[in-house]
Amino acid sequence: MTKKISLTTKMLVALLLGVIAGFALQRTPELNIMFFGDEVSLKGVFVDGILYFVGNLFLNAIWMVVIPLIFVSLVVGVTSVTDPKKVGRIGGKLAGIYLFSTFPAIGAAMLFGMVLNPAAGVTEESIAAFQVEPTIGTPPEIWDVLLGIVPRNPFAALSSGQTLQVIFIAIAIGLAIMAVGEAAKPVKELFVSLNEVVMKITEVVMKFAPYGVFALLARTFSILGIEAIMALFGFVGVVWLALAFHTVFIYGGALKLFVGKDPHTGKSINLGKLFKKASPALAFGFSSASSAATLPVTMRCARNLGFSREMSSITFPMGVTLNMDGTAIFQGVAAVFLANFLGIQLSPGDILTILITATLATLGAAGVPGAGMIMLSMVLVSVGIPIGAVAFIFGIDRIVDMPRTAINVFGDFIYGLIVGKQEGMIDWAQYNSDVDLAAQEA
Image (cartoon, rainbow, N blue to C red; front, side, top):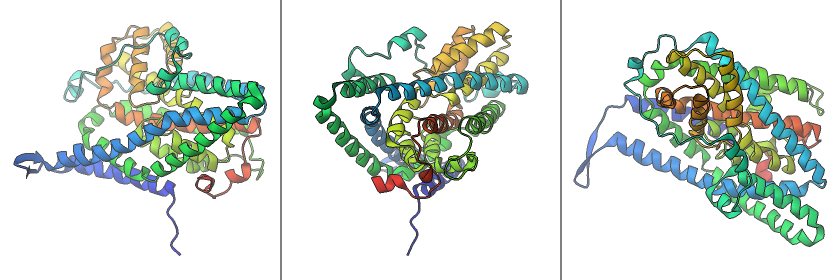
């Protein structure tokens, strides 16, 4: 009997092959062919035609289910918890962890940037070849972000994909269903049925995930200039180093301190084991650079890690918008890099301003590619760094966006495990099992 290849293996193989194919395409010489009487680039047809179509078709399919998944699963998760106070307690704990973990993440990242100083030796001429003029929207005011949590029009929030507002609406509806009681039972059952339908659609879409991952990464690395990477190698390296430090020491330390031992085996929680079981979500987060688009994969991995449906339905939709550790780390390194690059001396007050502004800026940041750049512009303005300085790192944003998204996703698992253990909502036998529970439930 042939052993079935797991989704984890398929995703990781697709990721590796995508990177290799992308760099290989960069080295492929241009070859023009005649197509219906017109001369076209064969590489262009493959990169901007086939790969672009396959990758974006898959992303469109994922985005099709993301907002319904957040909305419906969160309502079901809230109504599945019999005690309304428990919903508030879980949500409050998660929101608190998501917010306050961001502050030390930025602080450590800025320290890496100051000590290693990746701006040393970088000149405007060295990056002029790939410098582009980015289109950066006006960063929102903090108070506007907070006011925007409560939507004036809930239907507009759902149709436009405002995740923070969708979360608020879902929690409000879930709590209202619980408060009404028996009379709202048909509504509760409707959402349970809708959740099953959305999960079935998600299951079908996920069968094509490896092909989407390959296409997305192959195209990304085929157009990401080697010159750009080498010119800003120090900046990229410091961001990746700060992300690795946060993963090993902050996430690892949080597991040891707040989770401790696995109640099922009596052994200390293994960061490597958690990383392995979460790897499909991390691989997809890396390739798509979108924690929101990764949500269906994240929730599937969560079930295999022993998260109860209720815990999974509350934790991960909230994490999409509130947990931005990876983005915060990028902002910390980028702010120091650009200040040093432009010869701007950051005072202790400026450093504190960056810490506070970057922490608040991540609140409700969209879990989509490039959102970190919009939030970074807010941070730069707060300390007098010209917003146009973003252009110097815009060309290689994607190569630091991918790992920071994966770290955001991994953080959701870490913090969810901490709160889930405290609330008794983790099946530790499943956590230690190799059984694909998500596939069985589909």
